[in-house]
Image (cartoon, rainbow, N blue to C red; front, side, top):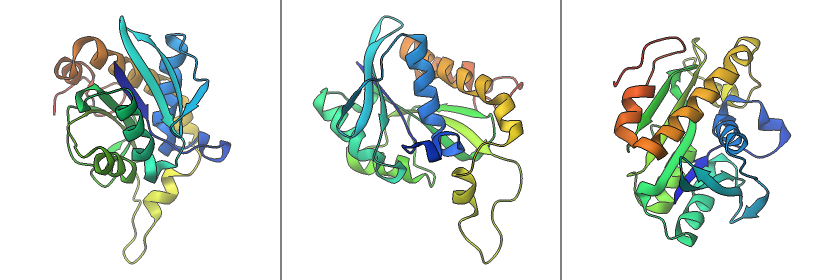
Length: 202
């Protein structure tokens, strides 16, 4: 079984923000494959079904972003999964809006939710789909902090809203590819710098 965990924050206040892209991708996958996200278990909203003929558990941790690992660890343990069975989907401020990177492993790169997952399950050897959210303008000012966090929790801009459906659909495609074909091929097919660019394995 695969566990696809999309990261985000619960509540309407955060629903339409860059930090919740992981939730949105899980919602797309659930809709595509008729998976009902109707149960709450281990502080996560979950649904179980099949993608590409393989059993899949979709999850949206409800612990708020910085404690995402609490729910992920419990779901991994309860379902007797290995790290290789986990696919983490989340926003990435280091990538421009619309960019996407599939990776087989790696550090949290400053993402507190990812770091908590790594800390809780004790490894960074799991697949991830990193969704670029950087808006293309300066987020940090010398002597000030919090600009990036403020942006991540702000509502989507009009320009982002115009490309959002394509972006999360593309991310759902990439996640399905990992399940069906593995990480290596998915990296080649789906890694991109920004919408409309060619795929590249950088």
